[in-house]
Length: 410
Image (cartoon, rainbow, N blue to C red):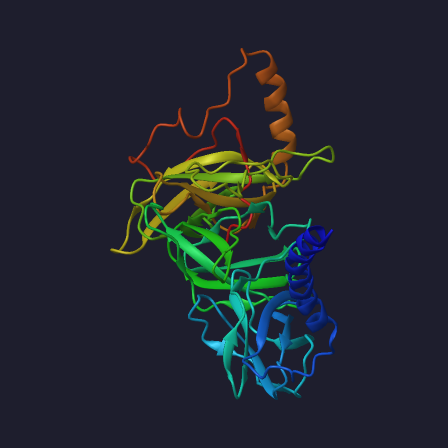
């Protein structure tokens, strides 16, 4: 009996010690904590961007002051070097995270930004973020579909708009690549700001050669428009003077720059048809890496070639032409100069009003009836079948050739 009691005592001793050891951690957990909050450097988290209007926005984040008075601000700029920052703001001592926000201006898409907080225990920075616009409506340019030729030395005006979030008060730049379009695009003047509605207008004076333009947003992630091919045409003047004989008129003028030997087409303007007439095909927008300008059809006046001549020398910079013609139809006439492909395009003068002598209309009708009995002749093609003539300055009426009007000629 005594031996069994001693054996139990030996077994219960270790169990009691183990139970006491397990109870100690539980007792310590149950006891209330009297430790004061830790004073340390703030915790910082960079947030998102809201209330975007043009280049203005509201940057957000959170700061835990860790029981110390804390100041904070945002850094932002085109790279991780930033370069700009907001005015510092203050938070009182506390132990909870506080949501904060600060307004900024000049924030462009692609800019970097981060939140910085400082207290007496140190400075902490949040993670770097990049500003992007999350929207279903992408940034895009809206530009005219066609562009008329500009006379030599004229002014090119481009008006358009930009769509998408942040289009208002956005910085955009006009860029150019002159003929033969082999150079990279460079800015034309300084960038401008769009209106609150995203509209803009650029003006390029004294354009001296055909040039391709495009519009680009300013910033690390630029958005660019389609290519705008602008043709610069030779400058043509046309004047008329009576030759002293009934129905005969001297047509004369100048071509700038000198285009000696170029063909001149004196053309009669026909009114546009109500059902739509094919006019001169102006250039239209191009997609990048596309060298041949596409064409589109536009309604406008039609021109019929009545007389032909050739440009003759005058000075180093100006050439001249002169021809005595027999006017059969009263109406507006112009001189169209055809030049070889190059930095300048073919061009036309403004129109002049010429009067046919009395009875010329009836005579034309009798002639046309007689012509009906003769075999039909095809009208000549301006760019292929006309031979150059330099022997005489007096030019007679030729078989009509219908040419489309060059819109915007001066």
